[in-house]
Length: 89
Image (cartoon, rainbow, N blue to C red; front, top):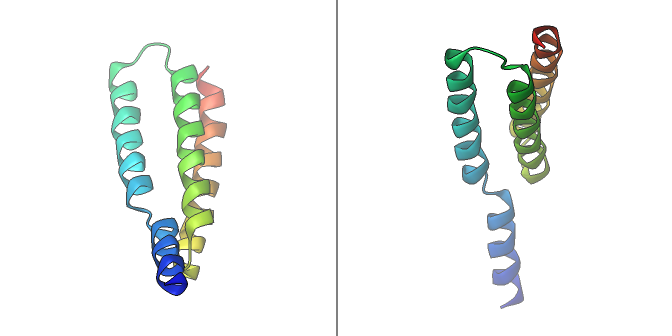
């Protein structure tokens, strides 16, 4: 029925597991970049862009005020990291 289709679509749109998996992957990659050392500023800035994309997607999929608040906090932290990364380059 139409209602079932809409519920399935809503469930798919609100499923954030994929974004959380990607965020975890980005954390691991960022850790690897930092461990490797050298000229890391550009690569870290790119990773912050990836973090930002995932946080935007998380916030847009949110059906919970808690998830929305976490998404906003994540964006604030990402911006703080980007500011610090600018000092590395």
